[in-house]
Amino acid sequence: MRWPPVKLGEVCRVIPGFAFKSVDFTTQGIPVVKIANIADNCAVDLTDAEHWPTELFNEKLSKFLLQDRDILLAMTGATAGKLGRVRSDQALLLNQRVAKIQPFEADPDFIWFLLSSPKYRERFYSLAGGAAQPNMSGGQIEAVEIPLPPRRTQERIGTILSAYDDLIENNRRRMALLEDAARQLYREWFVRLRFPGHEHTRVTNGVPEGWEQGCVGNFYDTASGGTPSRKNPDYFTGEIPWVKTQELSNGFITDTEEKITEDALSNSSAKLFPDRTVLIALYGATAGELAILALSAATNQAFCAIFPKDERAHSIHSFLFFRENKEELMSLSAGAAQNNISQQSFGLMRWSCRPRH
Image (spheres, rainbow, N blue to C red):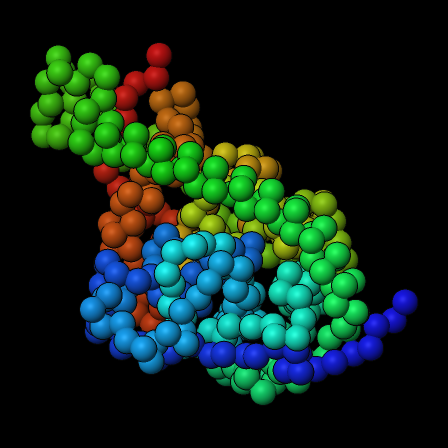
């Protein structure tokens, strides 16, 4: 059955965000959702969100408050066309260069699942292309045509797909809680040095007696990836997950947008890294961002892969170490035009760990 096409603007309002003054951002207050907070898995990640002071909130800003299940679209920059959906009941504000797509004559869940499908994500990416600075206007977004079934059909589709979406969201929240617990345990043991038995352990120059110490390079190996030739499209029709820096999530990578073939792996500098390998972006806007593989995967050359040399080291420990020491990691950046961390510089970072028994 073919449903009649309508323009998105006939059933949805496109509301761009507000131009907040960055000098007023703080570490507390109302989180402000920027392009960087829209993850590649379509989630809205508030981990590193900046905040607008509560005392500066006024009636004019009410238009830019976000609600649970609001649909967001990046309008400019390298990630223009990226979609995300709010899954939070807390008060949030929408920053400029991000648009809220607000259905008024259509079922919100149906619109979300339609727009977040590969076909429409590609459509939005193509809208923003063709310029030195990718950009799309509200008018361009509203002019996109979508198929629109009867309202009852929309609601049935939305209800069925939302059940799966809610299950995924619940699992994501559980993972976030587990990750937070791991970070707190790391800080307790390795930053505050309140590990089991610390009461009876002498600490000298910040290192407990009996602990292994040295540099990251003493405990971990590093490597970088590569990109198979785009001139051979068959290379990207395989089953081997291939990670790009845009897919870093500061958590686990469980799948990738693109897959490559065995031939692509053999005929390029790409390498296959085992699960639990820690990946850190080396340059560009995502420099210093990291993730840990939950599956075997290859990566492009913009990564440093870090994996244990022997039983003294552990992947989860290194993941938490680099996440907790991001400032030091970014200080290794050597590029003026853009952030650029050399692979060799990781090995020089100071490291200490408890021996594994």
